[in-house]
Length: 116
Image 1: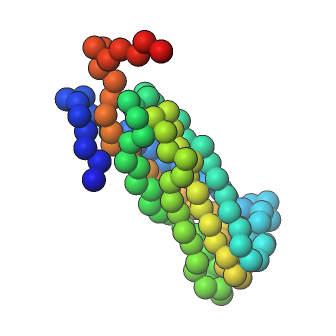
Image 2 (image 1 turned 45 degrees about the horizontal axis):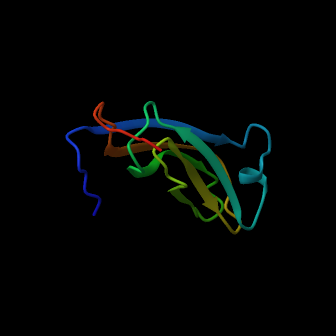
């Protein structure tokens, strides 16, 4: 459990089109085997420390002739941002993916001091 020790709690959220590989025959559409795509996200305002981040599919467009295999997660979370990580494998063909994310965490207070 993440305990927030401040009266200043922030929520930031957004959506991101990760890729649209069917348009240019990108690796998620034409490739096979393990594939990964990462996208950096910067928060609109820094959190005091690493917030709790939730990432989920908002839209996915997959070829119906192959198995739908997909994994989406948040990685390298800091007070300034994180990376969205999308993975697939096997013969899965993915045309495009859009995800939504939300971050909840403590914000800095004007009384916070950092001497060094």
